[in-house]
Length: 154
Image 1 (cartoon, rainbow, N blue to C red):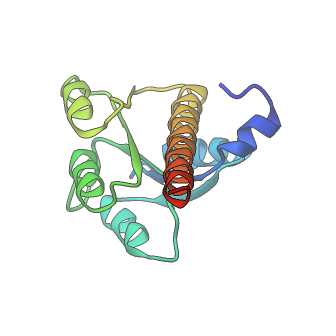
Image 2: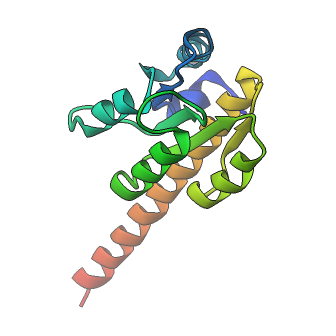
């Protein structure tokens, strides 16, 4: 959980919330907005794919329900994201038992949120993902700077 508002802003990002149950989607989307995140909403995976396919839209995390109507469920959406947008993290939310194993197969950090969930637990998962992404970027930047400095000294 963020220690301060300033800390929260360091890891703020864009969250794509995908859920075909409008009341659930609206509540979690509004909560995440109140926490400082930019939120895009999609009612089904097909809408999410349109958003993810737009090059001008930056998405950091997809938060999706496992069971949805439409051409694909949350598992299929997570597989698509992993194959086509590896820069985007996925958090799956579901109440069915099989979702735990599938989530661990689809999400690098085994990000599965059991339903019903508390909004703060979703916020905390997203915060941790974005914070770890920030530290991974800083580590990569440091490595690149060291390599560049070492290469220029020769």
